Image (cartoon, rainbow, N blue to C red):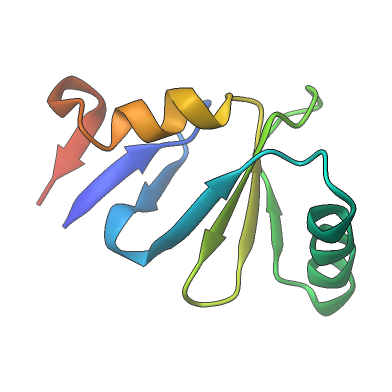
Length: 84
């Protein structure tokens, strides 16, 4: 199992990630609000500005302060990944 650091030591199973996107578009903002209403939103920004939104196959939405490019780099970076 490959785990990706999405900020502040929070890890996400890489096999469960569907997409990593920017939070700027209206459809993504609607999805964030719907996820918050349904209890499937996970905010790991610790009060910082949301720079990326991670979608999982379990319909959870994760907000991160890291840019999408940085998170996508971590999928290939062996130093930033924990494997079991």
